[in-house]
Length: 393
Ligand code: TRH
Image 1 (tube, helix red, strand yellow):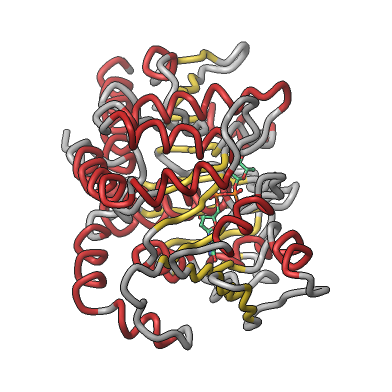
Image 2 (spheres, rainbow, N blue to C red):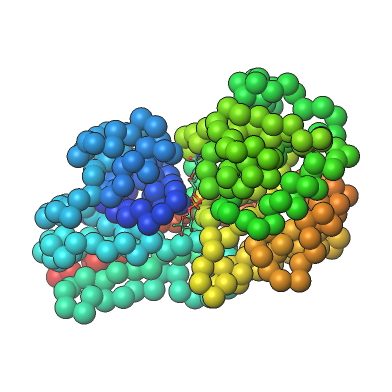
């Protein structure tokens, strides 16, 4: 028998809870399986309007459409009564319809059923990655696939060409990119900073710190949840896409919320990126630029454990003074009590600018030496398919 991952069919199911992380990750995975593994992928999405925000050519009113090599299907309650896929991925524990699960059970061998989990740098992830969970009634097994920062986990989403595209952009494309935003090349010492964040009580003191200089700061804010706070701080009633405001050393410019690929270019161009959730955090790491991460807020401050886990890994090989600045800043930005205020954090960040930048490059290279999530997931599924075939009489 011949096994060829290129002939595999995948159903990826994504229910959008809120924000853009669920669809952002699901789409990135679907696209890279199609492009890099030659797989036939159907992506089922229950909120095509959210999808359209990160992929503007998606038509929200179509039941089915082809998008960059992936078949995109509207996931309605009737979705689909038949399952024809070799591999079924439910993203982030979204619940598959009973009829679909029943259809999965009629296949021999049954499809490989995978629950793609949220990303965490915590240590327990390695022990849970890949664990099976047999269905209580049907002859099906679901596997838990955990993204992560080590080879004992499922890894991180990383398109095969992303680092070369980034390197090419950094070498040849940055000036033209700034021009496309109506900006000249940065002045010596100037900071270009992107801000993608949830509402955040530490924002005003950070903006105050930037406003005070001495270096110029150009802050680029894609339209979104943090913008009302930026507007309130600036004293203007409502900043919108295209607006710009100068407050002493700080220049704020509001950008449209763009496609994922365009957002990558913003991360690649900036000296420092404020990111949030899951996918933008990973993209900022591939950008090889320092980042400040705002974890998705969870009840009982569970996200502070996630924050400290990533901090622990990221600062492991960072010089102590820079590690302290980074830790203080991330903690303050995430509301951890006891962290110094943003004025102090920014003073430290300015002093450690070179070291933090150097480390971001090292960190990117270290992560890039590991298999990508797409490759790891395709291997995992293929192994399960093989073992299933060989164990089926
Ligand atoms: O939008 P998020 O806050 O998503 C969150 C997290 O994923 C969280 O883990 C999850 O539980 C919650 O949603 C429901 O942040 P994230 O993960 O960074 O996703 C944002 C996506 O939006 C990412 O794919 C990048 C993309 N994006 C664009 O395409 N264009 C833009 O202009 C910007 C700012 C982002």
